[in-house]
Every structure is written in C-alpha cells, then in structure tokens.
Image (tube, rainbow, N blue to C red; front, side, top):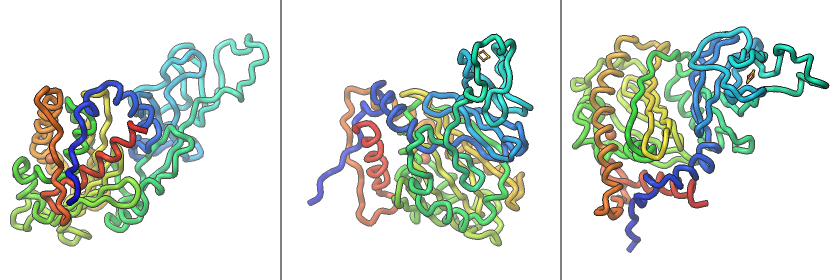
Amino acid sequence: MTQTVRSLEARYYTDPAVWAAEQEGLFARAWTYAGHEAQARNPGDYFTFSVAGESLFAIRGRDGVLRAFYNVCQHRAHRLVAGQGTTRVIVCPYHAWTYELTGGLRAGPNLSAVPGLDKSKICLTEVRTELFHGFLFVNLDDDAAPLDDWYPGVREELADYVPRIDDLESLEEIEIPEQCNWKLSIENYSECYHCALNHPTFSTGVIKPETYDIQPRPGHVLRHTTESSGLDQMTYPIDTNMPHATEYRSWFLWPLFSFQVYPGNLLNTYHWEPVDAGHVIVRRGWYTGDGHDPQVIRKLARQDRETTVEEDIHLVESVQSGLSSRGYRPGPLVLDPECGVNSEHSIQTLQQWMREAVDR
Ligand code: FES
Ligand SMILES: [Fe+2]
C-alpha cells in the first residue's frame, strides 16, 4: 500500500521565516513575468514592475532592444521611474543625473567636480531578460538556467496551439488583491476538485469538468486540459473556425505565471505578485489583436471576474484563516492513480516544489 500524502503544514503559509526564505531562495532565482512587450513598443517607452520585493523597470532602447534594470539611481539610490511612460533619457528626480536608455550614465550637474570620475564605469544594474512570444520574463539570478530549460517545449506548444500569439496587444489587466499566502492562490488555481461545487458558471458555461485533467510536464510546468461546454451552453460566443475552438488548455509556469486558453482559442494570463506572507495580487491579462472581437473578450473578462475569480477569493481567504486555527491538522491529499478532475496529484507536485524552495 502506498503511503498517505498529507497537505503542506500550515506554517508554510503563515511563518514570516518561510516568506523570507522564499524571497531569497525562490523569487530572486526564478523567471518572473514583467510585462508584455506591446507595453513598450517605441524607443524610450518604459514600464515598472516588481520581483522579490525589488522595484525594476523595462525600457526600449533606440536599438529596439527591450532591457530591464533595477529601478535605483547609482548616485544615492533614489527611485528612477514610476508607473509607465516615455522618455528621451532616464532622469533621476533627486539630483538630475541622467542615464542613456541602455543604462549608461550620461551626465549630472557639476560632475566635473568629482576627481577622476569615469562616467563609462557607472551604469544602471541590468537584469536578465527573455522574451517568450512577446511576454517579457526576467530573472535576478545571472546563473539561472534559461527559460526553455525551466519550461521545456512550452514555447513551441503555445505557438502551435495559439498560432497568432505573436500578434497580441494587451487589452485589459484586472488586478485582484487576495488576503492569503501566494501559495494558496496557486494551489487553488491548480486543481479543479473544487470546481463543480464552487464555479457553476465555469463548470456549465465554459468547460466540461468531467474531462478536466492536470498533468506535470517536464521542468516546472503543470498543464491543464479539458473540453469546452456544449456549444448551446457556452456563456460567450465562440468562433468554431478558430484552432482548438472546443478545448481549454493552460500552462502553469512555476512559480508565478500561467498562460490559459479559453474555448474559442482566447488566450489570457494569470500573474501572481506575492506581497507578503498573507497577501498576494493576482493580475489577469486579456489580449486582442489575434482576430477576436475585443467586445467579446471584454465581456468574458467581466464574467470571469464576477464569477470564477470572485468565487475563488472567498475560498482562498477562508483557507488562509483556517490555517491559523489551533484545530487544523493537514489532511490527506486525494491522489487518484487515474488522475482526473477529482484528484489532487497536481497539488502533490506543487507542494514538493514549495518545500524544495524553502527546505534547501
Ligand atoms: S540619487 Fe539620483 S541623482 Fe542623486
Ligand atoms: Fe477555483
């Protein structure tokens, strides 16, 4: 008989020491989504984002390259830019040192007074980037393995599944603050054992829960597959000429991102931004430019926010408070060798990654 596997102990979701270990040992070494390249199409366009508690920004150079830097001035550490915008050069708001779009120091008031100053030696600190079909990922660890080693084959699978993925423009980003540890939000995303009971709209008007399955893929990927609801039951119109029109698929890329393709070949994304041990911001990205009617996408985005997303907030927030209860002992995971919708084998995989990130 195989042994019972129990869910992760509560301290992983509540202990500030675990959170600190994750910042250092996981988020500062993993590939993290920064933004879509369409947010910075022209030279000088920039946008800010955060990784492992650090503020960073991506900016397009005059050479067309999108680079990412720590958002910190090399003089006395003031923050350089906020939000998003366009600029000719990067000007620090504190003492007006200016930097080229490629990060090199260009000028500063009275710098000739600094003996022996070699401006070419002062440069913003750049971080590693990789573009993945227009989605910009960064890694603070210069020694990290490339993105395709973390998620083997996903780049090709996605291009094959969503043929116009390279034509996307971002349409909406919906921000969802959740009062729970980031791992609860990701576990909740990574099983559909709770779907039939909690997501009536999703389970009857988008997908067929009895066909839902989630499988670990090579590297750090969990792939979801299911069929769409019957065409007469769909809550939004789908163009059956689109590839894979009556399927749903998603690729969760550990630790903080997922590409999700709704029936009708509608690509959307999840990006989790952990704030502290008890808070996470979930960002839902919706895109246009791949032949779909933006009105249909906006309507689906609203439906998703009002049903599935709203329903999940209550689930994860209730679990977060339950984990602080003296009365909780971690229960067994339901591991069906046949997998399928009523199995939590994907949670077993995730919780292994969660342990490994902390218990090194
Ligand atoms: S801190 Fe940026 S110019 Fe002084
Ligand atoms: Fe859910």
